[in-house]
Amino acid sequence: MDSTRSDRAARPGGTVLSLLVFCLISGFLLFVTVPIASLFLRITPEAFIQSLQQPVVVDALVLSLATASVSTAIVVLFGTPLSYVNARVRYRGREIVDTLTDLPIVLPPAVAGIALLMAFGRRGVVGEFLDGLGINVAFTTVAVILAQVFVASPFYIRQARASFEAVDPQYEDAARTLGASRLAVLFRVSIPLAWSGLISGAILSFARALGEFGATIMFAGNFQGRTQTMPLAIYTTMQGDLSDAISIAIVLVIISFAVILAVRYTTRRAV
Amino acid sequence: MRSHTTLTLLVPLLLVAAMLAVAGCTGTTQPNAQQTTLTVFTAASLTGAFTGLGEAYTAENPDVVVDFVFDGSQALRTQIEQGASADVFVSANTKHMGALQDGGFMENDTVAVFLENSLAVIVPADNPAKIMNLADLARPGVKLVLGTKDVPFGSYARQVLDTMAADPAYGTAYRDAVMKNVVSEETAITTVMPKLTLGEADAAFTFKSDVRADDRSQIRRIEIPAEYNVVAEYPIGILASSEQKDEAAAFIAFVRGPTGSAILESYGFDPVR
Figure 1 (cartoon, each protein chain N blue to C red):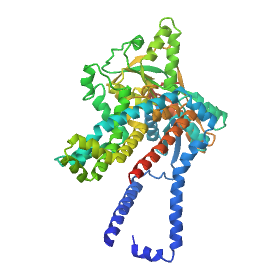
Figure 2 (cartoon, rainbow over the protein chains, first blue to last red; figure 1 turned 45 degrees about the vertical axis):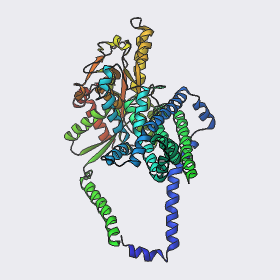
Figure 3 (cartoon, rainbow over the protein chains, first blue to last red; figure 1 turned 60 degrees about the vertical axis):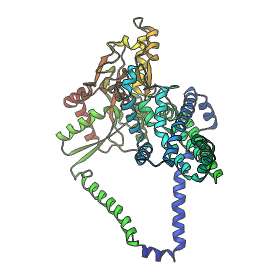
């Protein structure tokens, strides 16, 4: 509160302050690293290798990677034109569109899950119509992908919009005056220039899709090989074989590390 | 500028202080000198019934406050083994209670099975798959929800199906057909009920006590005959480390007495006299 007094105290006691800051920083770093390190300490390499061969672990890994890849592809397909238009075109209601596309970031996963049920469930707003056509979404792999697209899309769209906004419009205008069509400009100028941002956005989306738990368990259920993704498998195996749960968790930690490194690498190359 | 930052720092602080003050005023009332507080570790499937029991008990004994901790039996057992202080432990199966008895955590002569439970098949009230009996569960296209093989209501369901498979009236083909209809394996009853009430799933194996009075409008129960059904046993007992063994014994006597039994029956349990 009393900033003048703390300013005066900071000068003679500079070492005290820096010591305090050091303690705060190291304390927080410990808080982050100890739980992650504990995962690796609680399991022997043999048990880890053995777990990785368990059908429940293999099925979850395959399903997670497959669904997260499909989800990311869908997000890129729908999200790229949307983010480009919102970066370049000023139209009425653009703010509303931006808010809507950001909404899943702050929605709790449980809310996403119940919302998807209300929409695509057997008695849902859309689901009832689909049910009449004989299409059932709940408890299928499609439901897993829908849940992932819902929660992961903002990560790509936000990043893509920022990257398109960072592209100097002069390049696009130059290409247009040289006779390139709008589409050609998008694919030959804008996307290549925004490329690293688009890639890192897609990677972030993929990571968020991999980690999706709440909406999936509510909307898609928990069935090995069909809807049991890695987070659901961790939750399920915790009640039985803990070493399987730890192994899946370790795999997810490794993937998360790779994601962070990949994002760092792609964004750094841009600069 | 400076006064502005001071203000932005002050406002949240004042808010926090106000919240603390409010929490302090509305928090748990301090028990006075004559009041005892009993801590009862209770299996999660008894949440509704024991909340009612606690209210009834305090109404009869104003000088006793009953604090419940509801969690999975496995988690409660671990907490007791790690030194948590409680007076009474109520487990959803004999396995976890037995482990505590072997470890010397319980007053072994106070431990007894006081409650039995069994399984039932539940369907949504409008019954989209038109399930009238157990045989209908094997019909192709029925969406069935089970517990995982590690949680009690899931392992018991598999036991029931195995017993039915051994009976020529149903046979192994029946069990395999039913298992083929499983669309989701849930880890807790809490995620099963919404899937039924929303009509996402057609049927589920649950404890018969899981259908509460206020679910009756949305959920219908199909009984499983005794010859195929299981008996799930719930033991209750006093912890060796309890410093209020007399009060704990009085509470257990109330749970097992006529008032307690009536409350438990209203939740679908079968009290063991």
